[in-house]
Length: 159
Ligand code: HEC
Image 1 (spheres, rainbow, N blue to C red):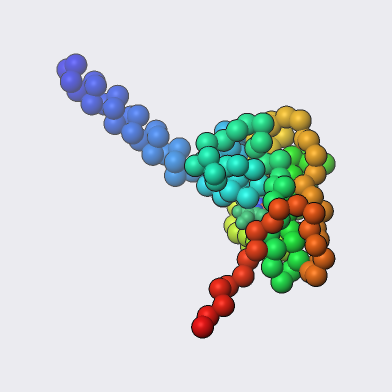
Image 2: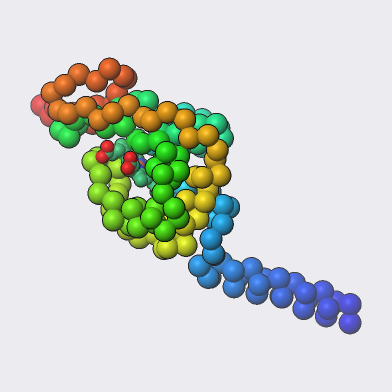
């Protein structure tokens, strides 16, 4: 009897967690945290994140990059997403991201696949990060010299 009850309890747990994973997981800061990670947002928008092998410094989370990305489009900087989120309500933020088009290397086309709950969760997470801080450096058009370090996106010259 005891074994039977344990088995029943275990299968109940598995069923419950399976059910939760299969559903859209609702709107929460925790889900937003997860979306920012699996969406790769920290890779560019959080300074030092990739260099620290994905160990997140909460003070730096999504504050934007001081290092530019240079290519034929000019030099872009991953924006301070805390400022973006602070300036909008949850719904407006979700609409903005769903319809966003931006310059490289921002993978804006991927944002169009997030669910409404995921975008709202992302907003809650970003707002929870606290002080918004300073904007990232301004975009520099092609042919003009950036005043910051930058990474050049260019294919190597083939022989
Ligand atoms: C490969 C680097 C990279 C990744 C990954 C990335 N971004 Fe960006 N993002 C950028 C750059 C660079 C810009 C600035 C583009 C521009 O100036 O047009 C930007 C701009 C944006 C903007 C526009 C901000 C504004 O000022 O209006 C939003 C919103 C944004 N990113 C959200 C995200 C989210 C959410 C994720 C994760 C799902 C993400 N980004 C992942 C590089 C990246």
